[in-house]
Length: 186
Image 1: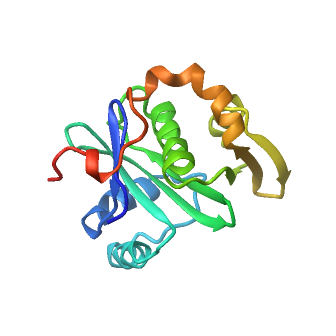
Image 2 (image 1 turned 45 degrees about the vertical axis):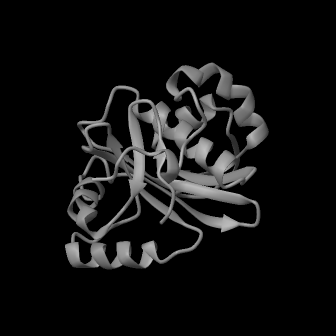
């Protein structure tokens, strides 16, 4: 089973086929899906994608939940290239907790840097997605390129360790946890 990541007010659990409608609802929402790759509004295709994704040995697709097990978002870690990973499909549901963005981003980095031991990150953000671009810049991510659609960012463990101190209040008192430390799964 792929790891479970625990934060202060949210946690990441593995996606499963029962989440297909939730994911489609987020991805096909005109506002939330505005900066995402096009997703067909087809539950069967989404279930097929989830099933294929679950077989991956390197990629992770998480449903983000609050502590009442309500689904409040999604995030993926994928595109492993040597010692670097990418992350995306970061979508927030309407019922997400107040500090969803900061806490979920911190948990991505905690998990990837400290549990998976990847020292580097590469990711892209669609042009026009100004809030997300600004968010990553506040974390000191660097834009290393662009094309017609995207800005391309690099980030690394060293930069994260510098900025992490500023955000410690959003993390649990211990490092990101895995299955052994998780609450009882439902």
